[in-house]
Image (cartoon, rainbow, N blue to C red; front, side):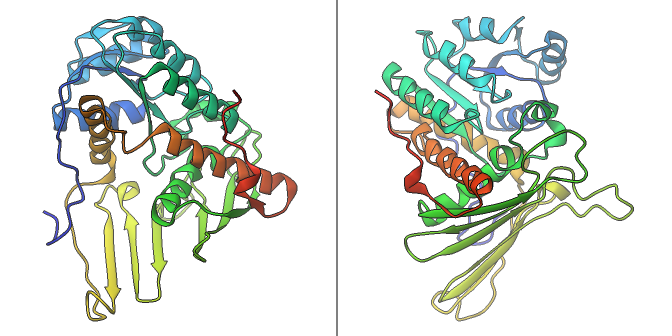
Length: 337
């Protein structure tokens, strides 16, 4: 149970729309579907790049229909919401196919939405024109050894891992005015890539400075000492401090500790809860999309907002390549039309 005043998990308001899942990897099999089973969301079909993989996951989670291809799943009139857990270079075509289907009410895509901010802008505008809801599953990070498709991309850490943390900073402090990013290649990685270990400094119009450090390719672990995967965070303010951890790399609940001169009389307070980021956070992501479909209200995780995160990532890459601080105003996210 959460401590008094803290509710880490969303209340399920809407759970009636039939979901078709595309992808059968770790994120889908261990997170999405585990969360949906707990929440009571109806999953009616699954497909993946390999039908045998989809069949295995379908048997585990009692999904009644396995399609030969993702396109066939999207065309299935029983599916109302398409849940994508697919490589970002393959996502846009599937999103566009889903936008054309009259029976599809909404699409939940994965971060990054696409491989460039320009493509993300196009998808944002095409979804708006179609009248369908496109939401992006922006929920912290995952270790890429689960995602071997990343080996085919030059852009590695910023686009696929840092995107979670930079998005959270946008959520907490608003849109930054500028970003400075440094990187080096990850010496544990055997394939070619441009960004392996990254450090980004963000400046916000309010004066807030934020630093995000990502070393998330493979650990460190299995390197002659006990596993030390961790996600730590800390926010220092003028009237208090908050700090904590994201516990899923250790299979534990996340933590929060804070002290405030205004609300805790300077004493440290540590609420606690039993649920974890993986898989429980995926309940909220799908629930907010279903609720948006039912009520007509914008989703909490809108594609328009995600495009702003994509612009921040693009600015980070420009900072790396040009060796300078990049203002967000340099990255256009206006419609080409």
